Length: 124
Image (cartoon, rainbow, N blue to C red; front, side, top):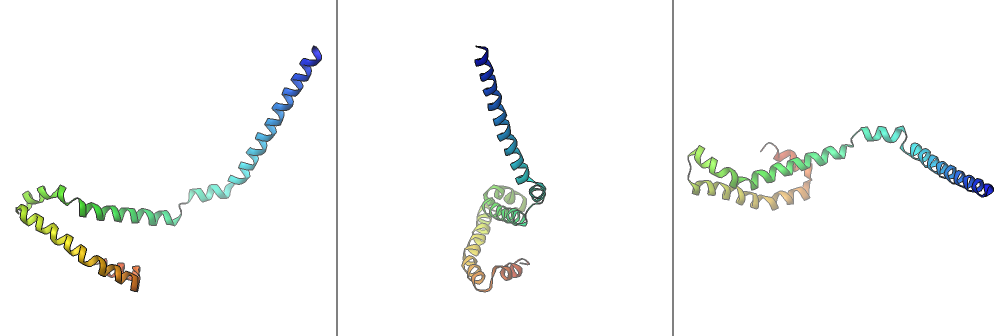
C-alpha cells in the first residue's frame, strides 16, 4: 500500500512537473514572440490610423451639417428673422447644388485624381 501511494505521488509529481515544463516553454515562446520589437511597434501608432481618424471626422462633420439642418432651423428662423419658407429654400438650394456638383466632382476625381480636386476645392 505504501508502494502504491509512492507511485501515485511520483506520477502526480511527474504530471505536475510536465505541465510546468509545458507552461514554462509556452511562456518563453510568448516572451520571444512579444519581445521588445513588438512592444515598441505597439507604442507607435501607424500612420494609417491618423488617416482613418481624419477621414471619419471629415465625413461626420459633413453629414452632420447636411443632415442636422432640421435641428438648427428653428433657431435660425428666430435669430435671422426669416420665414420657414426662406429657411426651407436655403436647404433646398444647398441640396440641389450638392446633387448637381456630385457627378461633376466625381468625374473630375476619376480623370485628374483626388489630390488635385481636393487641393482645388478646399479654398471654396
